[in-house]
Image 1 (spheres, rainbow, N blue to C red):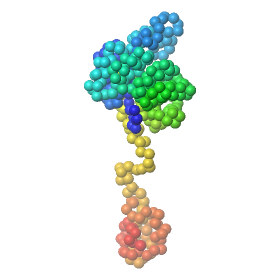
Image 2: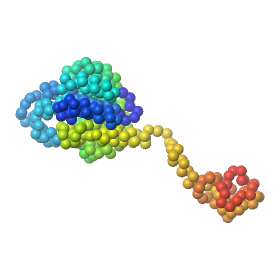
Image 3: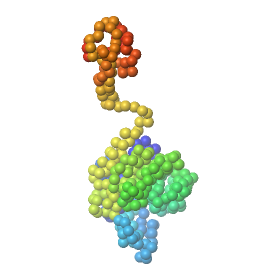
Length: 335
C-alpha cells in the first residue's frame, strides 16, 4: 500500500447496531460517497475481555459511561458469521474491505476470507503476540498509535517488520471519543514520517475537518473515519460521518492535496491569464523617429503589453528607431 493521494477508510465499527442490513447499508454508503475502502472490526466479547461485573470492567466516563466491557463488546461486535457476506457484498460493489482483528483467532478467520491487509487498533499496539501473528501473513499493515509513546510505537513497528509485514503504515491517533482540537499535536505526523520513513495517516475521531485538512499538509495519506446511518443511534455514531458528510470529507482531503501535490514552484495557467495587469513601458506622448526616450514621453504603467519595467532606465536617452503613437506599448524593435 503506497499512497500518493489521500486514501479514505470508512470504519463501520459498531454502527451497524446489531443488524447485518445496516452493515450493508454502511458499505453501500461508503462506496456511494467516495470512500476508498471500508473496514470492519473482528472480535467477540470473549476474545477481548472477561464477563465480570467488578469495578475493573466498568467504564466510568466518555460516550460508553456505565457500560461493562463485556456488555459493550457484546452490543458492538460484528458477528463472525456476517463477515463472509459483507466481504462478498463489498467485492460486488467494487470497494476494498479489510478488518481489525483483536486476537490471533480473528487473524486466522480473516485469512480464510482472504483479507487483503490488516489494521492494529490503538489499544492493541502493545499486544505484540497479535502483531507478530498479523505480520506473519506477510501483508500490508496499518497500526494506530493512540496512547502510545515513541518507544512503544517503535517496538510495534519493528516487530511488524521483523515478522514479515510487507508495508507498515502508522496512523497518528488521539484515543478520545470524540477528540477535541486541544487534544491534538499534529506535528506528530511529521515526526512519525521522519522517524520511521513509512506511510503515515490519521485515525480521526474529531468533529472538525480542520484536523484532517492540516494532516494532509503534514504528509498524512491514509485517513480513517467512522461512518454511521444516524448520528443519534449507534455506539460510535456521535463522532461519525453520515450520508453526504462522507463525500464532503473525502473531497476536502483531495482539495487540500491538490494544493500541495506539486513540489516545484509554478503558477497555474488560469492565474497567468492575469499577467496583463502587470506594468510595462508605454509612450504617453507621440514620439518621432530619432527622438530620444525620456521621462517626459515614456512611462511605466499597466497593462503589461509593453517592455518589462526593468528596461526603463536603459531606454532613457536612447533614440527611437520608429515613430510611436501616444499610449502605445514599447517593444525592443523601437530602440
